[in-house]
Image (tube, rainbow, N blue to C red; front, side, top):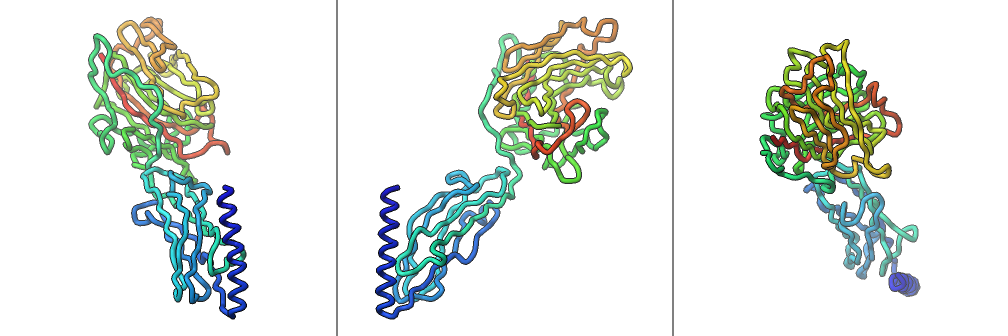
Amino acid sequence: MRQLNLLLLFLFLGSLNQCTRDEEQNTLVPTVQFPVDISGFENSANSVFEFPLVLDVSSDRDVTVYYETKPLTALPGEDYIHVSGSIMIPAGTAAASIEVEIVVDEFKEEDEQFRVVIMGSENALLEGGSQEAIGTIKNDDTIIQVTTAGYTSADSYAGRTMVWSDEFDENEINLANWTYDLGASGWGNQELQHYTASTDNSYVANGNLMIVAIDEGWRYTSARMKSIGLQEFQYGRIDVRAVLPEGQGIWPAIWMLGGNFPSSGWPACGEIDIMELIGSSPNYVHGTVHFGDDYSQHQYTGQGTNIPFSESFADEFHVFSIDWDESGITWLLDDTPFFSINNSVSGSQNYPFDDPFFFILNIAVGGQWPGYPDETTSFPQFMAIDYIRVFQ
């Protein structure tokens, strides 16, 4: 820093001396300036921002300009490549360009800015005593960046075979595994979201299934994916590795319904909630079952578990599991059991958990249980699922 200050002082004194000599020689001293700020979308067509430098008049001597990039909301190395140095405007000309390379990726980000600052000049003055231009990197990506950190479960268990998995390693959702619930009917809980099959609300990227809740200004959209009639299972160890959303009024769920749901209805078909989270409590998840011979006799039982208060299930991956057999169901978080039921849980009512079940993956917005979004709730919110595995 001291060396830089000495360099700037040297350049300033040199400029003063030069101005004096120019006045004595009756030579016009040009003024250098940035005429415009630069903005562009972060894509290959705009991988280099060119910032024009201009002189108000051409000079009979070479003009040297010293410059450096400085961060604002855009960060060097992540959003643009930091540069510093000098550029020459040759005698008899009046313009040059400073080039700054933009880091192009596929991840959805806020629009971000950096500065290009003139640090000094030779044989020219700086208009206003200093000059800078703003570079604005505009987002045109749709993929949300997701951490890779967090807990990973085993890929095999003694005495069991992996009978099915979706690792989400392809470039698109496998429609042999998944279909959609669609629409905006409140879903029995006065929810606000409109479920779609749009790639804005569900897609596969970088090895993760992404389910995204979006505030469109006049409505909330999200996705509710299900494996009914495609992938259904009776018993097994089920592991789901996921990063969860957070925020007031946000309600992600990884759950199962009995495959006889279309004929038996809910809750007679049975419901197994592998994981539910209320976004206002982002460090606490619930495991629950619902049952009952008909709607008027609906019952449920469950229990929750948490990670440290200072942490959130949105920070990194965790593994949400059930171990399910003829005797009952046990819930696990990162391989640690936290709740169990046995096959007498339903009492005199039908016990529905001896039949095949299908998966449902969704993010709800609003409703009686989580409440509704407020000014603290940010969008988009996403659930990233690395894999779903079934061992029997």
